[in-house]
Image 1: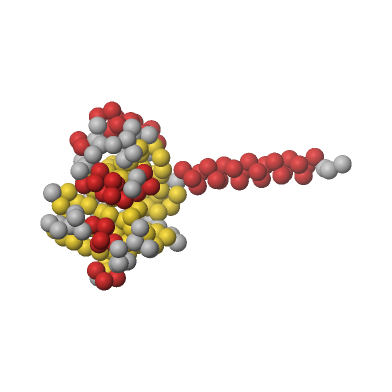
Image 2: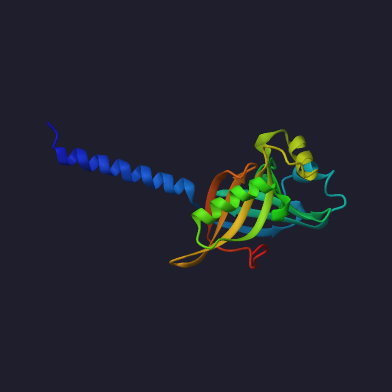
Length: 201
């Protein structure tokens, strides 16, 4: 017969492991580094995907991004008064398209859901950046690019927010993702800020 103490200890260890897993999934750490690169350092097919969209683009820039163990490439530019970021994996496969928006660009009910979550979860949250996001997994590359560059409010889009919030250790920054209805999907704590001013106090 096994000692009861060992069974209790094993049970406690399982509970701790389970709780740690939940916390990790809710608040992952964002360890992102971005390095500007030359056009010829991009995978061959990246610009081929974007050829119909960057002919009149301004401020065209190319970056290699390291997020933990994941590497990717980003093409950033300004087009029709919007700042775009198009991300590709190491093989040049489209991952997502994002562009910067304002709170007034989000449907009212959706933004109310987002702000309700922020105020419930964080102490004095301040929104520093909002991006409208179209994921490549939600359709063919051609359709995803078309939807993004037409700024379509489709059910599959996400909103990505950078916020700052104060806790016992001072001010911290977080990246949060919400779906088209304002439901929270993911939170990641930012290790180092790339956003040095508040856009929407």
